[in-house]
Amino acid sequence: MRNHGFFFILHMLLIMIQWEELKKRVKKKGCKE
Image 1 (spheres, one colour):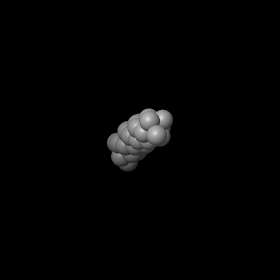
Image 2: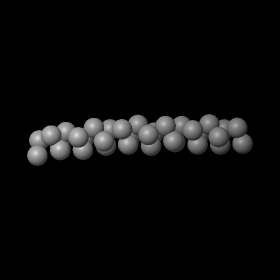
Image 3: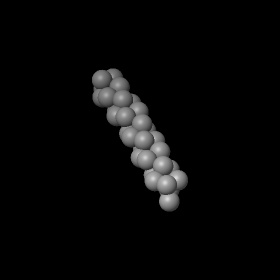
């Protein structure tokens, strides 16, 4: 079960990183427009 918790945290970190990248792209698009 310890591995399950580790993978859960890793998965959450990946989602957070992807969300940050998405926000950066949206800001760039907004500046262009």
